[in-house]
Image (cartoon, rainbow, N blue to C red):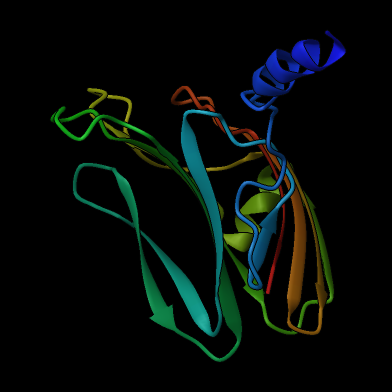
Length: 172
């Protein structure tokens, strides 16, 4: 009788969906912050790249990634899972910023976040609430140890709603 009790219990526990802290974990990166369950989070370090922030004729912010021996670019992305048969259902948020390759530690907050050219991007079929925005509220703590970059970022943008507002990750 006890064996019959454990079979359904084991079966039910196998379907437990516990929050995953390390959503993207490989030999190159590990995300410690929680990613929304309905999507995928990734973090990437683009070594020897620079972030060139521009404004178009409509006042919208965009960026280009250029070659540079002095800086590298960090990109964190959240891509929402959407059914393949739905048009215009894509939703993505990203945070992108630049660091100096010689930096060992970096601590920025508030408007000083713009020293790293930090941008928040929201990309969706959300009329009037999509695009890139300068991040001027929050705090960034970053450490560079050899080839490994660890950072802890909390931020807020007032122009558009956001799902991601806190990131803790390690990138190689």
